[in-house]
Length: 338
Ligand code: FAD
Ligand code: EPU
Image (tube, rainbow, N blue to C red; front, side, top):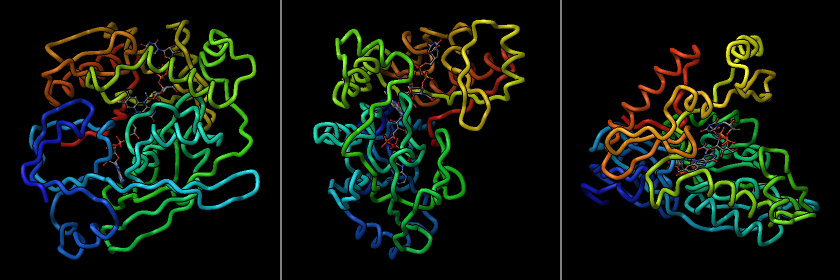
């Protein structure tokens, strides 16, 4: 057990937060011991993978932080056209994707370069460039902190939605994900419909792109828009893209004709939060060391010495201004740790 441990290198905003205790989790056995010792009873606790989707509002976390470090990637089943790959929660997502692309297994190439660890991927059903985790999800194993047992979850148990799952709602703060199983294709079919993927492939002169080219194209697009947390602290999109009824979208369009809107799976319209924030005048804004990234208005950044409270204050100002201008409430995508 580590006492008064700094989480500076465990959150991509780069906030120098101290926690009371931290514990590296290399296997389920560690969790069983913590369970027997009563740590999940009264103590405040929090799981961290790479810390790329959290914002600590205070400089001290008075509780136990579990740092997920278990490793292993194995091919566990051959289903003919597909294989099931089992990945331990502590593996880096990006490294896993690279391995699959190299091995010619398709399904996760559009999720190239998403920071963080594998165990967090189901939490918000990570998504990018037209693919979500749910599209390749087979099952997961999680430690139940209420019973001390390991439970298997199938797709229908997870209630995956846009940046959402049962682990963020009903089971928030109950299960610790230990590993996930994904179904990947031996003969991949590439998905090129989102945004500028085709354009990027054309500029790469990739006429008949496979998963390797798609992964490279997405890597290029992402690097051109998103700040690298190694250099500028951030947690990706700070807010979710709001989903509104089509009638609401028509109304907004009549006032803001250039407002983009995308079809959402539930028949509603997904708005671009980045567009709303930019239109409200925030893109490139900076107050002290907290700011709005100048190439992507949906990303809030820490230029160095901002505190979690500074970033949160800016987020609230943005939320208020977007609400006043468009009548839309932006909801944080990032997990706020109070
Ligand atoms: P953490 O930040 O450590 O944790 C996130 C949440 O999950 C917390 O609530 C934590 O308690 C919980 N958690 C973590 N691990 C476990 C576990 N094993 N069991 C139970 N709970 C757990 N996200 C996207 O969906 N699409 C993107 O395109 C995308 N791009 C990004 C780009 C940048 C530059 C950055 C910084 C972030 C981006 N993100 C994106 C957000 C982030 O990368 C993902 O949400 C990622 O899955 C978080 O992984 P993590 O290990 O860092 O999670
Ligand atoms: N836009 C602007 N100004 C901006 C940013 C965006 O006008 O400053 C508009 C543009 O019209 C653009 C549209 O927003 O066409 C969409 O932008 P982009 O393709 O960059 O995607 P996004 O909606 O801003 C979402 C995800 C990202 C994911 C990308 C690609 C959310 C909250 N964010 O961003 O995920 O990588 O799509 O699929 O859904 C994350 O979750 O952390 C994240 C980075």
